[in-house]
Length: 285
Length: 257
Image (cartoon, each protein chain N blue to C red):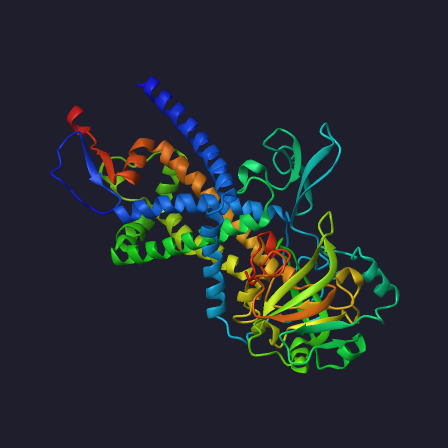
């Protein structure tokens, strides 16, 4: 949110330079990298569609999550997902889904959610590890830029007013009411916190849990992975963090839709965000 | 105004579906191209370089307590090699088994199981991480590969140890499993030729009579049914030239990630 303020007309609208070029560029690199990482990650998950808690997969305790198939149903096979002992029929999406030619196939996540679309573990790993570097380098560049340009302090850190408006902001979000006029120039407190959690908690966690799955990196300091419950716990946390990022993206895109899709899209492409100044109500009173 | 909104919304939802289809189809084409996997390979090369840079030659894999061993140790890949030679050896309790060690060495040798058991050994409880994603913990006892190498005295030009196995792979069974590691890994204190698992003779399902344990790497590096070790300068001329059965089929030679 670099501030460039041209001569403001008192009434009507003006375009405000909201996002600096590096932020826009890094935002779209993230969109691309995270999409590939999610889909290639689901492809890797499909090689062993089960999650565990602990140092190994075989501890005597059952898995936390299993996606598999059993005989039955109209197709002859039923997709089955078990989470914490609760079983769900997920035919069509998880366990059993239609392949590209419409035939039922046995796989964790369906072909349209994975890269590559067929079960090809070595290729999925190649995609995943390449874009992991893209995400990491882009993320470090973003944090460095944001600190140096004061984007972090100026636009993302909640100030005292933000904390005071916390309850109000929650109410506003629930009612889908969004700031207008000059107030729309700033991020609101929930928005700031969501971005900070993603940047400083979720993304670092998912990267670290990815590293924790590497047997070679485990030897940097034998046992460090146990701080997160062990290697299989790290794999589970990696998976959970991925879906929390998906949840963030869904809410993010939803908020973009309900608070002015084209205005937001323009500002993330050209940088310019339109502010509609509010007419004073007193005049009509 | 509503009409425009409706049109925009329709345009947008179509754009999302089109972008998704394009993404999946595009990735598929790129995966099958000649050049793109090489570009992607840069990521794995960078990961391997960083992994080696932040660890030392002697950095150790984590070891576990007896109580943390998995109740059953999963068998993956070959469960019983489908060859007459192997069946013959197994029927005789591997009494006729000899591990051949040759290639770029001063003194090629053959080791019976009794001779391997007489070499300096190491016992370790380690975690086996499969490339598929699962892990299992077991106790291994085996001859230190370093001790085997000291007996045969590798020549200075030797850079890799290649492990030739007894298990025929694939539907045709034409290719035998093989793997390779560099000498740095070969001399690592935790690198052993295991003949025992969980205080008993190594079961056939887990690689009897001898399997490699190279603890800082993924499961496919841990060759089972090892029959022969060859020291080489390069593995470019062996089988598919990538240094292992799975490497020839697209998996990374450095399996530390």
